[in-house]
Image (cartoon, rainbow, N blue to C red; front, side, top):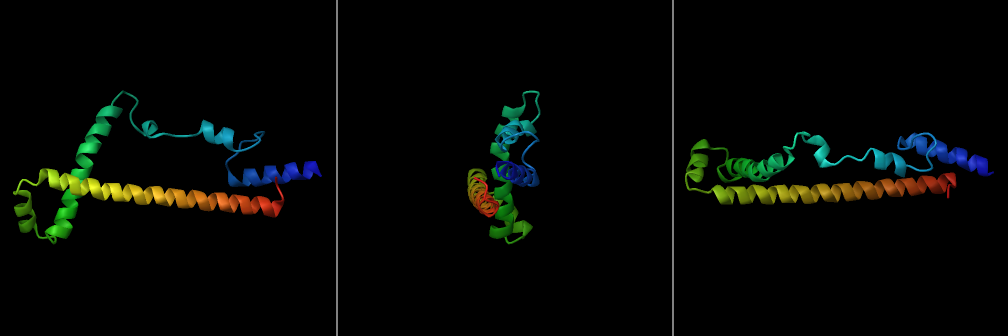
Length: 131
């Protein structure tokens, strides 16, 4: 009986693609293959510079797009008039708020999908009668 349970568990875990052979659960595999944001940035020590420039310029660029599309109504003449009013900080703040809202939505999406994955995982365990 116990051997059948082990086979079901191994089949279930291997079908999810998260466990290497011989591992009791997926924790070892996940910890070994966990990636952080710094893994995507160059290893030559430019991570701080890239982070700072991203923090400064990404909100400004997003704010420019927002001002051009929403405030100026895709009219380049109105857009240039708005930019001539020295609205650097307000444009940056608008972009920052838009990026913050997108980050909140992304966090909510990750939370919801992880909840649904755990729920699906638990339902499969109940179906296969795996402890």
